[in-house]
Image 1: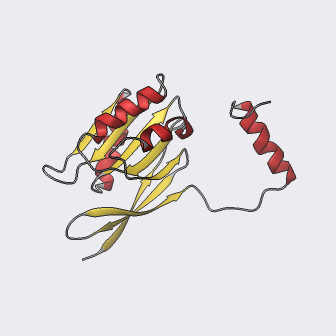
Image 2 (image 1 turned 180 degrees about the vertical axis):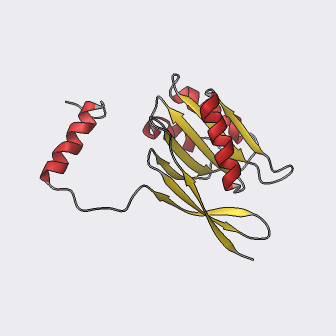
Amino acid sequence: MLEFKKVKIETPEGCNVILGMAHFIKTVEDLYEALVNAVPSIKFGIGFCESSGPCLVRHEGNDEELRKLAKEKAFEMGCGHSFIVFMKNAYPINVLDKIKNVPEVCTIYAATANPLEVVIAETEQGRGITSVVDGLKSKGIEAEEDIKARKALLRKIGYKLG
């Protein structure tokens, strides 16, 4: 048996989502520590799919709404050892290095504010993430005015010098 499923992940207004793979029950606590150490004012929820023993969705966070969303989406995906983080008051660029340095983190599939579609393969054994569709299809190639707008945005939000 091999079936493919798709799980839609809508990111709440003002939030970002990070989707990844890890390998140990303490992942959820280590991710918690990585996030608060990266950006003390961050608000987030984490869902982590345990893939042995009781196979529970482990969850942590410091924002109850985001924690609820993370555990529900993790359970909907049901892919062993996957994790999902919904966060606000920070961007993925602020936390990705800390998350990647968590010893049990294996890979990051996506880090975005865009809607995601997670493509999942299901076999008799379980489920796994096969791919992620991040946002929309490209509509064209940037022109000079688009380049100016991109550079202006990066300076407006403080990621490049004026």
